[in-house]
Image (cartoon, rainbow, N blue to C red):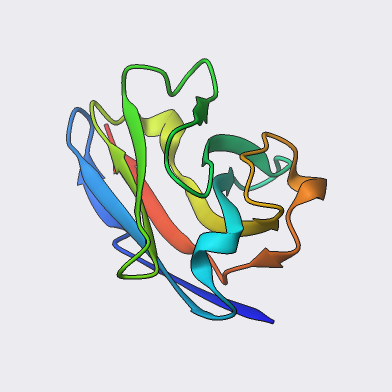
Length: 124
């Protein structure tokens, strides 16, 4: 079993930056690929970024490339999402998730464990 707790969300003006964190507890963190997803009101949950167990492989949605950076610190059991040049369209609840097998995946169905989410609101 893996427990995930996100933090770092909040209200930011357009053009600003945020760094989200996700602390994992339970089973060995380095056994899992990790991902960030988001869900805006009325929309389906969508992929944002993913990282393999070692951090060697990362994937981003097209809208996130150049603005988002996913990273992880296995010694701290934490995965991060740095988001820059934020836009009002980035407003959503952001979730981190863990996928067994150590690979990174862009598909939500590959993730077995999810955090409770952290709200990001970008004002114009």
